[in-house]
Length: 232
Length: 248
Image (tube, rainbow over all chains, first blue to last red; front, top):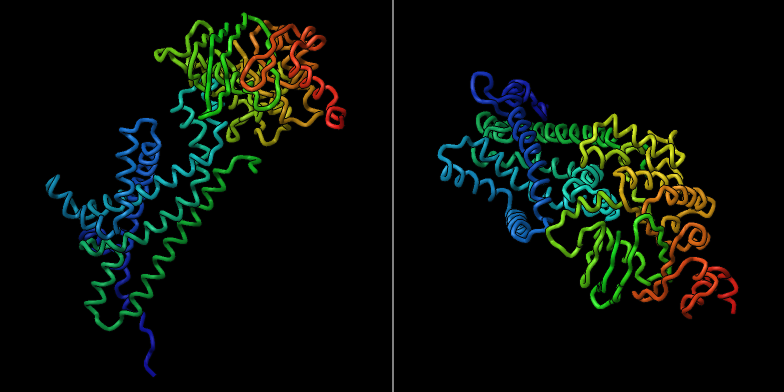
C-alpha cells in the first residue's frame, strides 16, 4: 500500500514555509505572519485604548465621531477593510507596501473591537475609586491613568487575548492581496506541487494552532505576573 | 470656611437638598445626622463637588463653587474626603495609596512624600502596615489608612461620609479615636454619622436633616437633651433604644 500521507513536501519546503524567500528575498511564511500579528497587535492595543477613551469622552464632539468610527468598522467584514486599505492608502499616500496596508487594516479592525473591551474594563471599576482619586485633587485624567486603568487593564486581559488570537488567525486573510504570509506560501507550494493539499493544509493548521497556543500561554503568565497581592 | 446659602439640588424629580443655609467656621467640628435618605450624604458631597448643586451658592475656603472658572481640582486638594466604603486603591500598597496625590499633584519627591506618609501612618497607629495591601487589612485599619490618605495633601477641611457605618462594631472605636484626635488639631471637620457618642463628645454643633431640609441646628447638649422638633425626637428615640422603638 502506498503511503497515505507524504509529508516530504513539508520537509522539502520547510524554510520556505517558515521565512519565505528570506534572506534572499522578502520575509514570508510564518515569519511574516508573526510580523503582521505582532505589529498589528501592539498598534491595536494603543489604538483600542485611545478609541475606547475617546468614545467615553465628556465632550460630544470627540465622543460621537469615535463611536461612529467604531460602529462603522465593526459593521464591515475584515476582508472588506483589507481591500479598502489596499486601494485607499496608495490613493492617499502614493506607494504603500502591501504589508503595511494589511497591518493598517488589521489594526483599525481590531482597535474597534478592543475599544469596547477597554470601555467595559473601565466601567467595571467601582465609581468610588474615581471619586476617591479626584477627592485628593487628582484630575479626572490622572484618576483614569493611575487608578482606573491599572485596575481595569488587568480585567481586560482575557478579552484582549481572545481578540489577539483572532488577530493572529486573521492575518491569513492577507493572502487575498498577495502578501506572502503563511497561508499564501501554502497555496503557492500547493499550486506548484499539485499533489499534497491535505498534508500542506494540515501542517499550516498545526502551525496556526501552535502560534495561538503559545500566545495564550504567554498571556496566562502575564496575567499571573500582573496580579497584585491578596486580590480577591 | 464653608457657607451654604439657599442651596437646592434635585436628582431628577427628587428634591434632595431643599433650601440649605449653613455656615461652618474654621476649626469647627460639625456633625450631620438624620434618617437615611435625608440628603446628608449629598450635602457633604456637594462640599467638594462630587455632587454639583443646582441652585443657590456654596462657598468653600473662599471659592465659589457655582463659578465655572475656579480650579475644582485645586479646591479638592484642600478638602480631604473619607468614604463609607473606604475606597482604597487595591493595586497600591498602603504607602502608595497615601503618597500618590502628593507625588502627582505637588511634585513632592518620593522620599519626602513617604516620610510624611509615615508620620500620618504613625498618627493613625498603622506604621507597621506601610507595605501591606488594602485587602490584607481589616475594615477599621482600611478606614484609618483612608483617613491618612485624606490628610496627605494637608487639607484645611476634612469631610467624613458615614466613616464607621461599614465597620464591624469592634472596629468602630479605633476609627472614632483617630477622628477625635484629629478634631483636637483644629482642622475643620464635617462628619455625617450615626455615632451619637462621638457627636456628643467631639462635635461643636449638630445638624439634623430630614427630607432634604435642615430641621435643627444646635449645640450637642441641647440637641440630645432638648430636641426641638418631633422628627429629631423620634430619630433620637430610635437610635438610643432601637429595640424598644420597634416594639412599641
